[in-house]
Structure formats: C-alpha cells, structure tokens
Length: 116
Length: 265
Image (cartoon, rainbow over all chains, first blue to last red):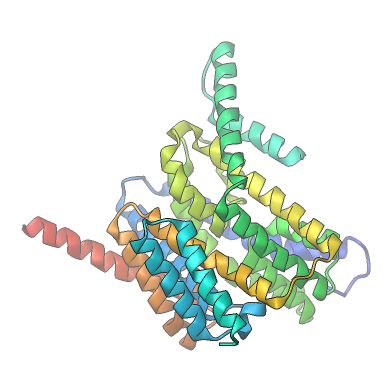
C-alpha cells in the first residue's frame, strides 16, 4: 500500500494518519506515561532532562550542519561561522536572542551574497 | 475553531477540584486569562520564526504533489516539522505505508524524552492524565523550548491552561500559514529561504541556553552539539536518539562528579 494505491479521496488522509500521526503521537503518549512517573525533585528527572536537552542540541547541530532546502547549498564553514558569531554575540552582548539572530543572519546573508 | 474550545473545557475539567459554583467561575476566569496569556505568545520572535519555517514547508508540499488540504491536515495532525518533511519525502519516494510509518517513527522518537521532561514541568497538582495526553500533541521543539523557558513563571495550577493557550494557538496559526502560503503559491528567492531556515537553529541555541536553570543543561547542550556530527557519521538513521543518550550519559557523569566534589569540600 503506497500513497497512490487507492484513488478514493480519503486514502491520503488515512495514509497521513497511519504513517504520520500515529508514529508521532505514540511517542508523545509514551512520554506522558514516563513523565507521569517521574517526580519533580528526582534523579530520574535530571536524567530525562539531560537526555532531552542533548537531543534538542542534536537537532540544532543537524539544522546547522546538514540543513535541507536552499540552505544546503551554502558553505558549511559559513554556517558554522555565522552560528558561532551569533552565539558569542549572545553571550557577550547582554544575552539577547534577537542580537544573536541579527549577527548570525548578517554574516550568513553577507557571505551568501559574496558567493562564499 | 472547535478544537481549542473543546480542549480548554477538557483541560479545565481535568484541573478543577473546587466545590462551590462561585469558586468554579472564579477559577474558570483565571484559567481563561492564563490560556489567553499563553495564546498571546503567538506574537513573539520564536513564534514568527516557526511560521517562517512553515512557509518553507508549504513550498515543499506543493512541489511534491501534496494538495493544499492534505498539507494543512499533515501540519495539524502530526505537528512536528521534521516528521512532516520525512513523510513528504516518503510520499514522493513511493514508500509503502509501513515504510513511511517507520521513517516517521524514527524521526519522532525524540519527542518521547522531550515530553517526559516537559510533563513534570507542566502538570498541576490535580491534572488528569487525559489532559496531559491531549496537551502532549502540541509539544514540538519550539513549544518545548518556549514552555521550558516560561512555565516556571506561571503558577503551578495554571500551567496546563497556559500551555494549552500557547500550544493550540501555535498549531492552528501555522496550519493556517501553510494553507495561505500554499494557496498564494508564494515564492521567494533562495537567499530569503536560506536566511529564514537559519533563524530556527539560532533561536533554539540561544533560548535553550538562556532558559537553563543549572550548569548541567549547558553541559548537555555542548555535548549534544559536539557529539551529533560524530554520531551522524556512524549511525545516520539513529543519530538524534544516540546523541540524546550519549549526551545525557556524559551529562550525568558530570552531575555525579560535581556532587562528589561538593561532598568532599
């Protein structure tokens, strides 16, 4: 059974539910079951939080190092440089998200404009 | 527009334990104001960044022969941008239903530890599990980062209302963004998309760093950032999951080391 197996109007929606919604929300529901057993001040929560944070950091690294779409054509060094400069600007210029975004974007767009 | 109302009612019933009618009305008013306060975060830098990411998704869907109605359904039903992108890839690659489901499941495993860490943060003293199941659908990376940052400033028994406002509004708005952008078939020069796609990692990076309550979160972040490219080389399919486990393990070694050091001194 593929996306094009049936021509009925409802088939793509069923496909989205079975191949998209179910394998996504099932993890959320398991997360609720696990999170429900974890006490606020427990060691288990420290562990779960450490794993979740490292995982989200992995998502960040993925978006910078192996992006999809138009960003994929830019140089990896430009992207790392722009992200590092943006993060340093955040750390040393008053910890403001907007400052880091502006610095990173100026470097990225500047570099792209000069075909770096 | 029925979904948020139903959700709000379900969630209200779940948390309400007060006996008198008067107190119930007062409680409902307070809940509504926290719900709206969460919803108002739709006008914020991270919410705007997420909308720009969905502008890109609308383009991807239309390029791959997914209709407007199907694309908007995907956004609302799945509510995880990576899973949606994987599903579009599976559809255009002619995957079977089972193959597509496995690919999506792998990209969505990350939601499990994220939700497990989020639930103790969000639940109130009387929150029912059904409310948590309903609300968990709205937890994706942006809402997770925003929630971890802000929930601690919300009274414990109002947190589910606050997150319902935030989560439902984010989901509905972005579903609408995809529908509108798809309908107008808006096209931008590649450099605009490149700049837009770069907003998301910069926002995650800085807000996650800023919302950390102790140094262990910073250790987890740095280890995740550094471990990911190495693990990606060896196990590209499981890279995120393994990064979470390895980075989490390294962080726990650090936490234990700090405790041992503090006990000695």
